[in-house]
Image (cartoon, rainbow, N blue to C red; front, top):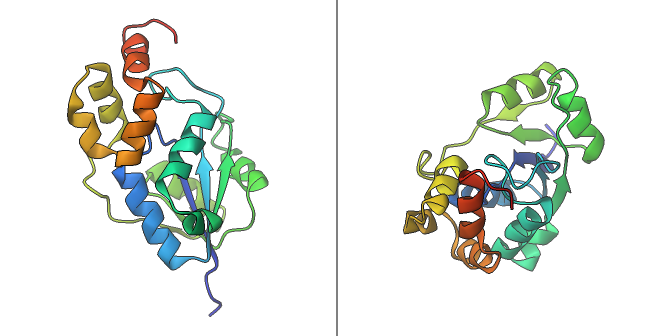
Length: 175
C-alpha cells in the first residue's frame, strides 16, 4: 500500500469558521500536502457568498502558520452549475490528490462516481459552526457569531466591516 501524500478539502469558507479550521488541522497532520479548494469564487456580495475570493484566501492565510501554509495548495475555482461536469472541472484546476474529504452528500456522490476515494470527518459542533447561521448572526449584529470563528477571523472580518456588509446584503441592498 502506497503512502497517502495529498488530500483534498473543498469549501466556500463564507466565512472561515472553527469547523473548517478543525478539518484542515486534521488533514495537515495526515497528509504531506492538502489541496484546499475555495469554491464559488465567481459569486460574491450575496446571501450565500458574501465574501470575495480574495477575502477568503486572506481568511485562510491568517489562521495558519507559515509551515502549515507551506503544506497547503489553495486553489480558487468558479462554479460551473452543472453536476455532470463539476468533478472534471475541479480536477482540471488542481494537482492530483489521493483522497477527498467532504461531509457533503452531493460532493461524495460525484467524486465517488469518478472512482475517487471520498471520506467524511466528524463535524466540529455542526449547527452552530455553520456559515449560514454565522452570516445571519452577523446581519443581526448578534455577537454570538464571534464564538464560532477563530480569533484571527474576527479581527479580519472586523477590518473589512463584515457586519455592515451582512446587514446590507440581508436587507436587500447591494454592497
